[in-house]
Length: 159
Ligand SMILES: Cc1cc2nc3c(=O)[nH]c(=O)nc-3n(C[C@H](O)[C@H](O)[C@H](O)COP(=O)(O)O)c2cc1C
Image (cartoon, rainbow, N blue to C red):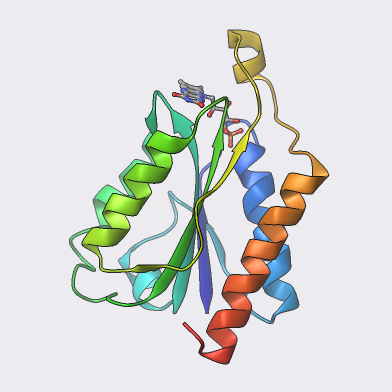
């Protein structure tokens, strides 16, 4: 089972995570949890992961970081070899958040099975940053495809 864990303040990452869920559902796999609701048992019970987060201040958004902080040690040495991928919603960069997820996943000995999918909303001013986000359809399609690919790989046991 594919577990998608996400956080979103202005809706961009949520739209990306829901698109990935849509793709995964088409392959018969789905579980979407907000970062604040997800815990160690959810991680242990899943076969693979899609982590989706905004980039804030060149880092993972705090709510997503808190998810990793709460779960990192309880599941350390229990997830080795499981596949994962990451999605980041950012204003203009996203690399810092993607790197942080990769380092955490390396500590868990997860296997990255797709490069990070970064969507930039081009929000620069305070007004634009705080406004609700609309993710363009081509980007949502990439998220759907990533969710479907992860789910299909898990279902077929090819990871
Ligand atoms: C406090 C704060 C800091 C941010 N810092 C960055 C940043 O360092 N790099 C970047 O590319 N975007 C940054 N952004 C922009 C967000 O990543 C962008 O608005 C994104 O769409 C948020 O995702 P969400 O709609 O899922 O909340 C920041 C936004 C906020 C609120």
